[in-house]
Image (cartoon, rainbow, N blue to C red; front, side, top):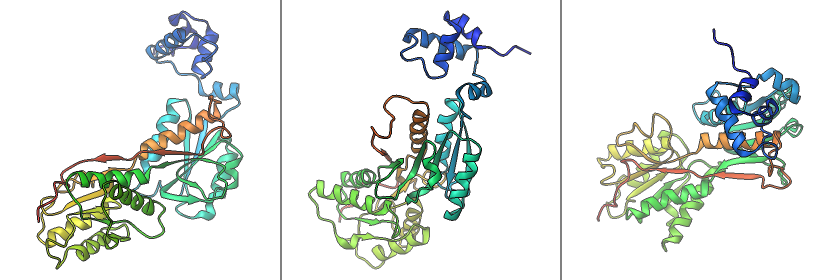
Length: 351
């Protein structure tokens, strides 16, 4: 069996000292090792497939190199798991491992989950939620560097950095896509009452109309809920028994499941998508949006990007990267949603 490469091997290949290798691979190269030498060290480490010994690093730095992640229901839910995936990508790339605990929507378990992770000497904590929502931050999260992903501190003076999707811009971009296709009568099935994301997407919808110099019809915005049957019944109210001149030419939906319901209603009424009606989703849900017939145009929630950004912020704080002092930085990072154009939207029909 081939011998595992050591830091000394990396130093010899890069033509530098053993201490320079240690500084660079422990994230302390800037200001201590020349940029050209840093590049040679990283290249040599990659060529030799060298990775620092995690136990040795932990003892030397007095860190466990473990990040605890608590979720409300991300692990047991089919939604938003990519947030944890993105967070884990970044953690592993920087020599950390993650441990995940799910409270299955039982807020009473939050504090005990945090304490369990703290007892295991985690270096930092992340809280992740399914869907954007406020969070009563468990007090234990204030004892170590911590960050929130897809949620935000509900207290009047937030103490933790949060990373969330830019829902207003997402709603605006979705509406602008339909306006650019010539649609002027766009209905919005805006999701469920009580969701913080829903009014933000409505705000984006209104912003796009205002920027185009158009008025919004109040009866075109419905808080329909989130499920397929809600989309079906919401679309039937908008379309069934309504003359072509009076029905909307496009329906925007607050998630892809609502859009499925709209497509089912259109099929029931003999309407072709997108020739008679354009349908727009939100989320870009895996194995749904891209497999619908026709494939669904949608706004992709940047779940993996949220996880990556949150973990990067957390690890930068733990490792003392310049500019990450919470007293000097904003407590909010907003990640843009991405428009995914497929076959369910097209030019507005003439009428």
